Image (tube, rainbow, N blue to C red; front, side, top):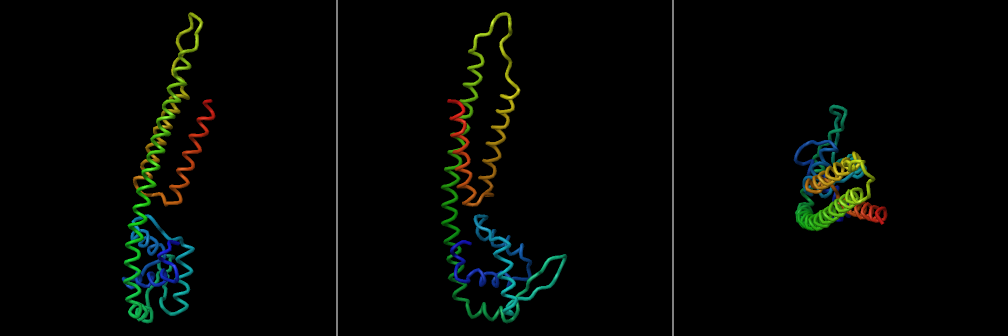
Length: 200
């Protein structure tokens, strides 16, 4: 969970979201993800236990609709929101600052990932070029014709192009969390190291 929601502040923010109208758990998750511009989304395992506790405390109730529990704030919950209005205003300011920090960090990671992808693409193209050149450079006894481009090499080029486009699209669409971006960088670095070892 992002640090901005430590010390029971997520509980308060859930009440604030429910004060805008009844919602089921996944709507709350989506609203939180939107509030953080897709850079943070709590898991169902984070949201539902808190909703259950809020219900036990009498701050929310739920009804079943379409196979889902739809939660609604009670008057007791609204009274708590009014009592904690100053704390809620501080929380909103902290969320805004956290989103700015996360956006900056995500931008830096995206730049690093794009650089890694460009480097990997360049090195893979160079490796493919060298492989093709090595095939053409091998002496071919006459009258055998010059070797045709290998179907595997064509498939390699297609896979490389598809890989680059898909990774770039995922990064540009902000569909990767910070942890996923860090893991992606490690995966790219590992793939590049493996290809370097293969071509030695």
